[in-house]
Length: 333
Image 1 (cartoon, one colour):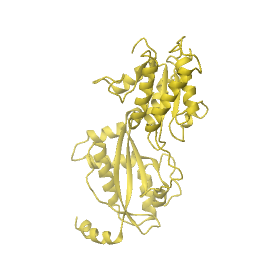
Image 2: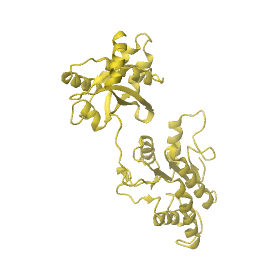
Image 3: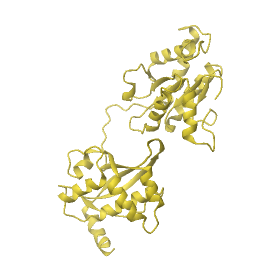
C-alpha cells in the first residue's frame, strides 16, 4: 500500500466506532507515519470499489506489519475475522504481529496463551501505548520507533489517558448477572456454495423438488440449542448430522404429518435464492411433546471464506386455540 508500516484493524462493522477511535489515535500520535487499514471507514485505507473483497484483503494482510483484532461480543460470528488472522499469520508471508484488543470479558481460544490488551484496563492501555509509541520493534522489520517519546514518559502517559478517555464511551457495556434463554427452539443448517449453486441453476418449475433433495441429503446441522434437541427427542445432536437423518429420527418417534418439512425446505430454497421466504406454514409436533411448532427461516447468511450458506431456523410454538383455527384452512389447502 505504501512505504509506511501498515496496521490493519480487524473488526466487526457493528464495532466501527471502536475502530474509529483506535484509528484516529494511531494517526494523530504517529504523526501520519503509519498506514491504517480500516474497512468500515470512508476516510481510511479500505477495499477499492469494483475490486474483489477477498483479494483486496489478502493483499493488505500480506503487507500488514501489525494486525489488531477488536473482539467484543462472543455471540457474534467471528468467522471472517478469524480468517483474516489466518491470512495475516500465514508462514509464507512476512512476519506479522497480531494484537488482540479484548473489549469484553471473553476472548477467543486462539489467543489464550498470548498477552492481550484489555481495552477496559488502564494499565493494559498504558502498556500498549508505550509499546506503540516508543518500541523500535513494535512493527516487525522496522528498526526505529514511531516517535522519539521516552518510554514511560509524560508524553506517553498523556497519550494513554487520551485513548482511555475516548475508548470508554464506545466500548460494550458489561451486563452482570444477566439471565437469558431462547424464546423458541433454534437450529442452524449449512449448505456448501456448490449445493446452493445447484439450487439456483435448477429450472424454476423443478427448483423446489431439486432443492428439497439437496437440503435433506446435504444440509448439515452445525448449531442447535438444547430445546431443539429436546424437540427432536435427542439428548444431543451427533456432529455434522444431516437434516434428512434428523427428520427420519423424528418420524420414527412421532406418527404425524410431515408437511412442515416441505414448508421448511420451501423457505430455505427462497433463502438460497437470496429472496425473502414466502410465509409457508407447516406445523410439527415435538417428540414426547404435546405442543405444536411451525419452523420459520429467520436469517440466511453467505460466508465466502467458508464456501457456505447458513440458515437460522426457529420453531415457533403454536398455541392450541390458534391451532384449531388454522387447521381447517390447512386441510382445505
